[in-house]
Image (cartoon, rainbow, N blue to C red):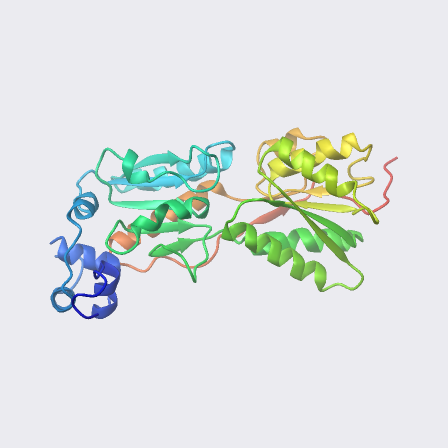
Length: 340
């Protein structure tokens, strides 16, 4: 990068030196001894000098703070899923002498406000849900080490990503419904611009589309029970043959679908099979109980914190998506099935 062009960042230094951003932070913050080799430290310093890199002092003060505190940025805690993520992250953090500050988005979903504006203490790193990714663009370059949850590993803002195997969960749902004989599907999709929901739509379309004589419609809804009810009711009342299986992006959407079905005089699963995703406590409060995909929220949080610790130490985080499990309950059955 020529001097006088766009201001170089720690990512540029890391690429030039052939090391991680965490290693750059350790060397330029004079915390590298015992963590990286002298040769690596020399390469980093030489690359920084060659590029004319000058750290952002405010960000550097945050990054090199001594509070051993991590910021967890998630959507508002409207379900217990992200509470579980926090519990898992905090458990691992405590084992390593770190604390976790929880920053829920006040809007519920979508971008949170700038998390640095509300962080009164110095921070060593950030773990963030992809639903809040738009708020985290300031972390790029010479900002804090970042681990993204439920994020595209090929286009993530973070130094590492940790994902649940959502694609496999959707495949399990589709295969279950196809095996029951369903061929007309409605996807009640979360109206949220997030990679994790794009994966659900893509995998469902691929799995259903691979079987002959199938039909897949899509209705979008906000992640609220009333919003899901309205969207599902409109879609199920539309022209043409009614879908026999309704695949919901999460359990709250499924609860709204239940209300829509009852308003339309449809019985679950006799007239309409319904599936969710998350396996919240809500899933067993519904009648009939909901067939859904179980996600281990606490393990998700644990893996997120473990990945951030690896980044801070200049190590490669463990790879591999976290397995998920389809839990079959009373909300799914063969199309046209009538219970005795």
